[in-house]
Amino acid sequence: MVRPRAPGVLGWVVISTCVFIYAPIAVLGYLSLSPTSQPAIPLEGWSLRWYATVLSDPRFMRGIMTSIGIGAVTALTGTLLGLLAAHTIMRAPASARLRTAVAAVIAVPLFVPTVVLAVAIGITAGRVGVGFGVLPVLAGHLVWVLPFTTFVLTARYAQLDTRLEAAAADLGASPLVAFRSVTLPLLAPAVIASVLFSFALSFNEFLITFFLAGSGLTTMPLEIFGKVRIGATSFLNAASMLVLLVSAVVALAAARFEPPA
Amino acid sequence: MRSPEWAMRSRALALAAAPVAVALAVGVVPVLVLFAESLVWAALPDLTGVLEAYARVGRSVYLAVLGRSVLIGVLLTGACLAVAYPVTYWLAHRCPPRQRVLLLVLLTLPLWLNYVVLNYVWVWILARGGLVNHLLGAVLPGLSPLRLLYTELSLTVGFVYIYLPYVILSLYVAMERLDGELLAAAADLGASRVRMVTDIIIPQTAAGAAAGALIVYARIAGAFATPEILGGPQQQLIAQLITDAFLEVLDLRFAAALAFSFLAVVAFVLLIGLTSRHLRREVRRW
Image (cartoon, rainbow over all chains, first blue to last red; front, side, top):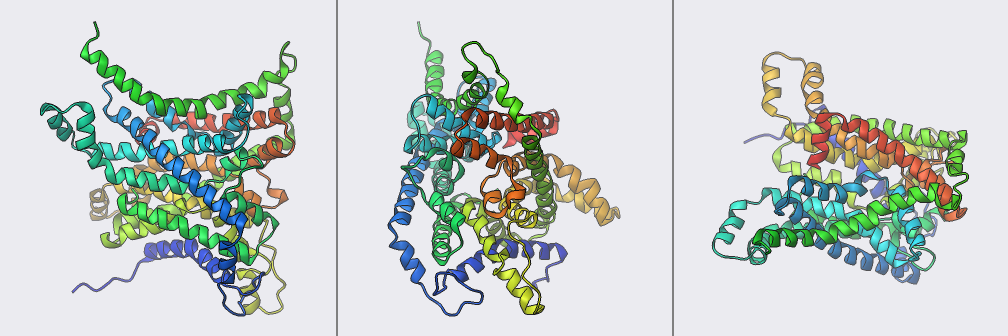
């Protein structure tokens, strides 16, 4: 029988890092149970009333529905475009230089600071007459998740056994049939992970939306940011916990298909 | 006569067209429009005062904010690396395999959570009536609450909190590639722990660390939510100036010039980084 070893110094660094990351969230969860609108440490009692208030608040619920809608469209479109891009980068019968160029163009938003990208899209949308609203927000989210979906899928392509695709071609399958019946099923876990992760990215995205939404559109991160500026309250604590919960569930589901690193 | 190879090639290009068009139209073209906005449009038709907006950016107030943003980005990326090195080394080389994936998921989960909320959690820790002051008051009764929120301290903590998971993830990838045999051999030959860190671990992972750092420092320098929620008026950063000019003052030309100046600094550092062959290889790996 192997006795569990006590963690060494480095082990304690890792444990402290986990505590550093999760203790503040635990504090927020504790304070979200306050019976009063302004929690005081320690709480004088427990109550779920702020969760009920948040879930029946029309502004907040509209924000969360908008975020889910934008997230769903972004995740599906972003993954589809990512699949096309990844297929081109990994399999296209084109020169290596061309394929590298495609990867570089897709990767641009990774290297341009988000605030610069947001201002750039905002000014361009104004210049071409699109203005503010859902359309520029969707476009901004799409270009923001595209490098991510593309490179999750190229990583998966790199692990595939190319002989399977070659065998399908030898047996007379057209490229489309070979892709649908051989490549796509092998890619499926990465495709699902890409949809879920890019949904989480879009659902939580704040800065691009802040620049491009205009006055008519509100998403959940915009709602929360607006309230944070006014002041910390139990309502905000409960709303924040709900948002963390939704994103954590989506991200953990995605991690089942595609563990980190 | 169209050869089948030609047909295949054109089909491949058609497939690539959609994502490339989106990346160009929403990623590359807007940056060019931004540059044109900052320079030419307002100066048309006779192009007088082309550099007017940049002359304003060049005033010392704005340059100071730009410099401070980059400095904070560099310093706090260094702080994140200092934490991430022992963490990722332990995860990749000392951690029992069964716990590795779980810990890695735990340490990187915040990447997928809402960063507005992740900044906000620190308000409750550091505020006057927050957890730290409450605990301090319990230990040292009579101590008046410390001002921790809206200071350099809260800004620093917030930045490390938000960006540490990025650095951990990118460094872990490099650390995992580090050959364990190399460490074992060095230990057998009697290398001290310090020598193992300075002669093996750091040189073998430096390119990976630098590739991650290049992206994270720019994100910190260009962050908006963290200085807005946790910083005070003394800690204004470049993204807040850009936002003010774009959304409050509606001075698009100045917003564009600020944003483009910031992009130029980021691109310059990136290009210097890419002169290193090792670094180019790392960035390509991403």
